[in-house]
Length: 431
Image (tube, rainbow, N blue to C red; front, side, top):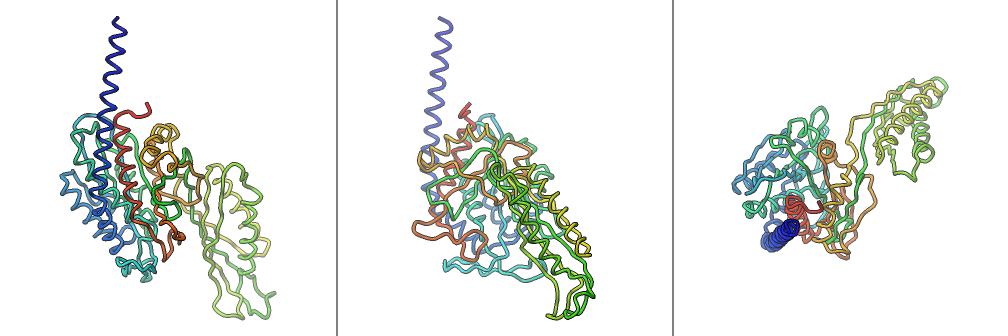
């Protein structure tokens, strides 16, 4: 009899929790509808006033003023220009981190939207156009919307939400620290200690109204590299009197293509070695003394990543030596693999399916883009996913391009997804 009573009590309590959760989800949907236009206006403000990495001063002030107006505990100047706000629910529970990135790119906008950026900034010593060409403007606006919704229902929340507005996702300026790595270093996941963290990225390749996610590696690690080749200058008519760094550079570029095609087990994971910069010489008939190159390395497996480092160093040194040249390869630290905790992903996948619809939340293949959200995931379980921003009938221009375009109707799904992830996790979904 006692066991039956306890079972009935458990069923009753579970039913009550489910009913209350369902009510909260309905409120989220209604509030997301109510504030959609406001979210769009925030996005347009950020888009029209973009700022480069570690220079997001006005962006941070705008966000901090809004969060302070919600009555949240707000901290500014985190990792240089970051903003962190704390929302304590009405009942105790887990601490959930929600992250949005803030920085724009050195890209001159070419779209015809009325809120197009005409801003300029200084990048690597040069004046450049500045544009939100990767959707970070939408990420900030979405998280501000989530903050509004969750604050309005804070008495019903069982736990704490830490809103993390992160600068310099695209990489800090040369000689500076920044981004998620610096935020972690400064303790953003502490006081109170974050239990899990969620993040999203809008995509102009993913149709509006859909979500893409996957367990384990969803985005690649990234490392930039620089390569300096020193030869011996000579007249172009007498190459035997010099050591040609241009020929050496060409051979290194060609030889390096065998790293992925012949040394990587591509049935396991993808990998990329790309040369993006080559500079050398000033005149058609002078063999220069030196050539410099830059490139990027991407991998979805840590062992493959390390093997690329080793193979590239071997190819560089041996190819240079075969030509009598000297070469110095520098591989920068970069970002880790963006790795979705499998247990957390399995637990929260039903939430993504529920908010997007069964046919609209799809497990995707990993991509070789990179994200410094990965630094948060190295510290606590994290889930990172993509929200559709591709307008129907419009060809995707691609991220980091002057024609990058997002259909703003896709942002409401991001607001609903992040808000529901918080509510469901706090109420023990999937446990």
